[in-house]
Image 1 (cartoon, rainbow, N blue to C red):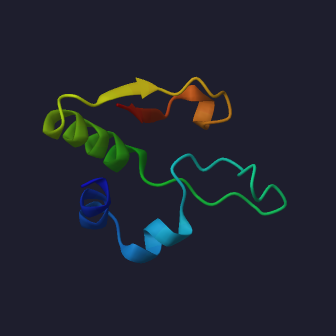
Image 2: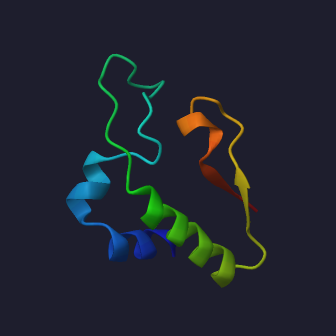
Length: 76
């Protein structure tokens, strides 16, 4: 479901070349970070998931590296 929603909001190339946070990856720390996906669109996407799946809760990420801790994560 989330993948379908993302493909409606973002071009395939944008999904492939961007990241959720825009932060440096621990797995590829030698590489430059990818640009962040549009935050407004991502917030809309998170709200749509919350409405579509009432059993899924969205919580703010406590990871300081994740865009200042402002990103959300899905918790089932």
